[in-house]
Image (cartoon, rainbow, N blue to C red; front, top):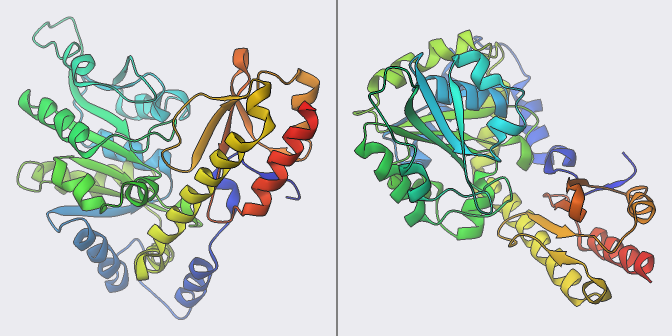
Length: 352
């Protein structure tokens, strides 16, 4: 790909340390399906990182992680509560609903976040004609790369637990959240009462593979025991699991996952700074969301359709809301200041 991409951190390729780990894992023979000491050891590292009171298993991708995570906590008459912009609603082709046969109830959101009040209004039980709320699914960071505070996550978890429900976190970019907030994933997730996490890696330098982690093994023992069977039914059990394990081992070593995330976050902040300093702001360009992690949402409404297309000949990015020409500019571990300087300079030229 010759174009510079701000389209997605999925466009960034694989970190060299991850590739080297895959190559090292390619020597000799190893039991399949994760039934080997190496995979078990790396899963143990993940569980230790997250506080030990948890059960982790590898899956193939982010959609699979969400499907397996949520299905583990659902009955046939359950509904999942989620922000209306949630990835499981907008970008997973109904996978969770098809696999679980459960409805997702979209909630009003602000900047990708739901409030305790909004969730509480949906917690209605006992009517045999209605689906019953079972689990709240949020993303951290959100679909707009904004962040829930630790206190906000804890309040949502406490609310769901107070009615016998659960909370799931779609953590496809959880490392970016931890790096931005300067806290551990354990503090953000395990210590706030989250029941299940989709622990992502492919948006942050991995080739393939995510992890599903169930917390609170005393209260969620049955879910943890059933996790492997649900993973198999969801076609998320990879026979050569050692190659996912090898990536996560390198990912965790020397906090590589945090270093990559911190870099992509810092590039987004640099992009925000350069845009604010540019003449584009005087011409009507404006930010539509706060820049909390590695995504920048900005309205390029002063550009005509032809000018926007001209900019996209050189750079890859996606238009989020057509009516205001809101674009999403994602940074990754491979984004450089030179990439950003070039983009901002070209934007200024077009506007001039």
